[in-house]
Structures are given as structure tokens and as C-alpha cells.
Image (cartoon, rainbow, N blue to C red):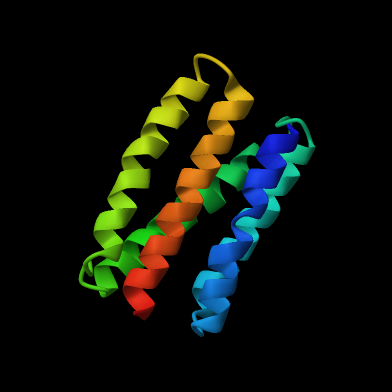
Length: 123
């Protein structure tokens, strides 16, 4: 569980990037996503499941929206595709074996996707 918490904290990087870029709504979505994911993981994934899913979908939607607004700007949007593909791999693999490790790798891929979508928009 410790690794999942540590990798979840990496979302502070895109949160700071969004704040410094003046994207306060995006910042709010990221912050709420961090909070609900932390609550979910700190409660041994027995509480806050629905909140975690809703905020994850909100973050995914916001990432897609800002990628669209950036006109899928090269190279950032294209760089986001690499962790996007790997996130599916880790998410599927986490269902079968070594959940904590694979879910943590999914967090890292999600942080990278969020960061690249942000960079595509603000650059």
C-alpha cells in the first residue's frame, strides 16, 4: 500500500504545473482526484470507491478536453500516448497479479499523461 500512496503523491507535479499555468479548474480537478485517491488507498480500498472512480473519470475527461483545446499539440500530446498505452497494460495486469506494484505503475503513467496534456495546452 505504501507504494500506491507514494506514486499518488506524484500528482503534486501536474497540480503545481496547472496552478502556475493559471488553470485553476484543472488544478481543482487534480487536487480532488489526489484527495479521493488518498482516502481510497488509506482505507484499504474499502471506502471511497465511487468517489475515486468519479474523480478519475473527471481527470481523464479534463485531460482529454485540454488536449483537444491544445489542438493535440506536438510533441506533448504524442508523448502522452506512450504512457496512455502503458497505463492500460498496468491496469489490466494489476487485475491479475502484483496489484500494488502494477497499480502504482498505473499511477505513474497517469501522472505522465496529465503532465503532457497540461504541457500541450500551456506551451
